[in-house]
Amino acid sequence: MATAWQDALSRWTQALLPCSCVLCGFAAPSMLCAPCRAQCLEGGPLRCPVCADPLPAGVSEAERCGRCTRQPPAFDATVAAASYELPVDRLVLQLKFGAALAHARLFGELLAEAVRAQPGLPLPALLCPVPLGPDRLSERGFNQALEIAKPLGRRLRIAVAPRLVIRVQDTMAQSLLHGGARRSNIAHAFGVADRALIEGRHIGVVDDVMSSGQTLNELAATLKRHGAGRVTNFVFARTPPQQ
Image (cartoon, rainbow, N blue to C red):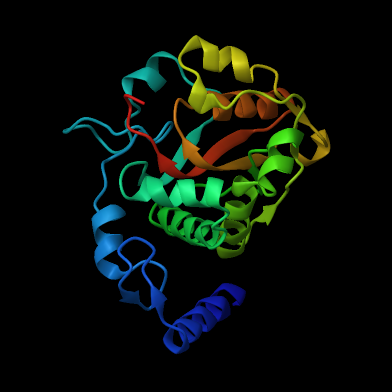
């Protein structure tokens, strides 16, 4: 009932206060016009259900990619709303480095739509945003993963636990590193605040972008060591495989 009421209120507000599309700038009833939504979000590639990498043509929807088959990650599934490419990547950068917090609400809502598009997908008991270290959080002033998790949780009716996992050590930005350096950088970076909230439960991990997956894998491994029964990633954008 609450979600239906929120959707109706959103449509009513949009009708009274039209805005501009965040991608093309033309007038639109919401933050994303229908043509930009169709071009950037609809009809995307078939993705591996575990890591969300695009699958080659002719592969079944339920099949894992070769990498996840050979070396399964600690997480069990990944949902991505968009590909991290022009012009979507610009929105992510505006959120992350320009404090365009309205984008986080859009990302959360689009992620919720991506989840609903997979009706058989089991929903988690809690949403856990990827935590930032104290220094980066102080510098940025907000955690973009938490800002995305809030609207996602409201849409899916799932509680958000901002401090379920804490970052016990500051690390370099993963985007500055490659290969094994990324794994070493993020190793043992996370700790659990309350094991009782995790044990035997399905935990959803929320982030803005998934690149190599090393951060999400380390976080999932930490949750599994503390008793999580299942871990699903919810990321707004997935980078192409070569990145």
